[in-house]
Length: 269
Image 1 (cartoon, rainbow, N blue to C red):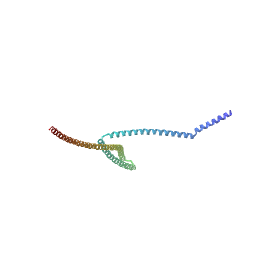
Image 2 (tube, rainbow, N blue to C red; image 1 turned 90 degrees about the vertical axis):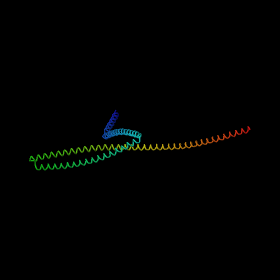
Image 3 (cartoon, rainbow, N blue to C red; image 1 turned 135 degrees about the horizontal axis):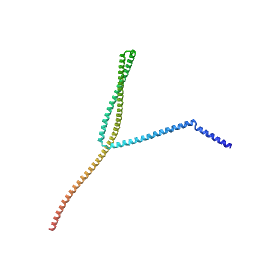
Image 4 (cartoon, one colour; image 1 turned 135 degrees about the vertical axis):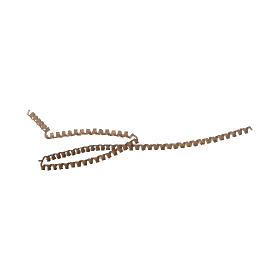
């Protein structure tokens, strides 16, 4: 019983040591790090899924563009050329419009900066004027009225300047947004023009290959025509020679008949 009790105490001590080890600060820190790594892995896994989805979308877009390119390559060359010229003209128009917008934005920014400086100078003048009036004192009613009028007028001008600056800021933002949209449209046109150029080059190469095939077929046809002409000339010459031989043969036949009749008459006599 004593030995069993000692063994039980040893097992209990070992279990307590294991529990203390399990709940030790280092183990808690390690478990926290594992949880953090698990969270990072989950985040990376989610990002990987998003990237896979984005890649699938990009692959679908590439297939759509390839299909559009194949469809455009089936179009007639003159229509493609007209479309390319129209895109060039629109591209030049967009470039001019973007340049005008940039100049307008620079001009507006310069005006706003000038108005801000003017507003700041007036603020300082008003402050100095108020200080002068306050130093003189406001004992008289006329000075108070003049002070109030000047203050109201200055406040009105300040409000007008602030509204003007806000309006110009909004105009600049609107023009910047429009310019950004035009630049994006310009880039789309540039990409479209590049695709059309590639399509046009491919069609020109295909046309050149067809032209070469046609020329080769024409050369073969001309060669066959020359062979046919030679054979026709040879056949005509042979027919002419045969006709001459027939004529000679008929003449000889007639001569033979004449001689035969003479021979028959001679034998009869």
